[in-house]
Image (cartoon, rainbow, N blue to C red; front, side):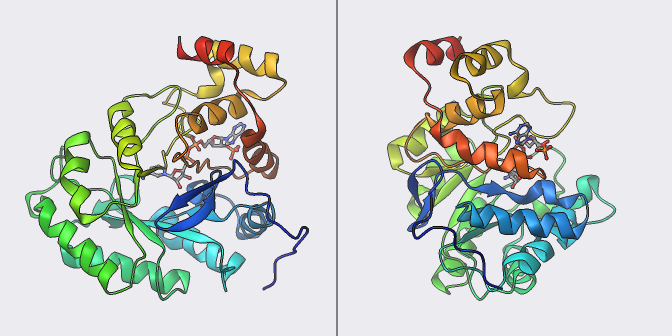
Length: 294
Ligand SMILES: NC(=O)c1ccc[n+]([C@@H]2O[C@H](COP(=O)([O-])OP(=O)(O)OC[C@H]3O[C@@H](n4cnc5c(N)ncnc54)[C@H](OP(=O)(O)O)[C@@H]3O)[C@@H](O)[C@H]2O)c1
């Protein structure tokens, strides 16, 4: 399919940054919310995102048991060359498991999940995969507590074979990231926002090492059990003062954490999509920053 080309240059929402050697707009799109709802609006939203300048889309084969990857393929394949697709490994679809997932941590399972993503997305090479190492995660069965070095060796082998362009790590602490640095880490994907700054030391290490920081839950997630950035009084006050929305203030704050920070907010709403891309134009002055820091 051909996407409408409304301008000669892409608008690059949020400016540009580097991800696994590719240049991408700093505001991208996280596709997890497309697990829900019908195909048609999901496909329309993905096409609109790319028309509006999104060139970095975060997905996983296990989102909606393959539904999200199928929608991405239906919406965008053959993918425009400038679009960077990022998926996840370390878990796989398990309809009977919690969240419909189970760990898939063995090196052969990492490879199998990459191959499944390639098949379902219709690709020969996946730009980036994020890997969630679970050897310290509570409740993970013994046969899934795999030596991290064996997993890193498999990720390097997948990259050397050209099946992935690079790999990132997800849910990691400073020790794990330090340990993995010699293997070449393209990005880190931890939860991070104005309502969850627990990964600040990992962000600091990414900053030092020039590693792309691509936090998930930048708005506090869709889960009713987790706090929302837009509900914070300081965020609402800043939004009123700046003529922005609270979500835009929350996203602009994450962007301001460093030039290597990339956003992947998730939404099923075309209005929210546009709003999130426009967050790159929101400037947080010193007074607002100080109020948000408090
Ligand atoms: N590595 C990992 O383990 C991991 C884990 C979770 C997620 N992820 C990735 O991170 C991405 C982002 O996380 P997320 O989607 O779970 O959470 P999020 O981006 O923090 O928040 C999504 C929620 O915010 C709402 N929202 C979005 N834009 C809004 C706006 N402008 N105004 C008001 N509400 C807005 C969405 O509802 P509407 O649909 O109504 O807009 C949705 O309920 C995911 O899509 C996924 O790709 C990675």
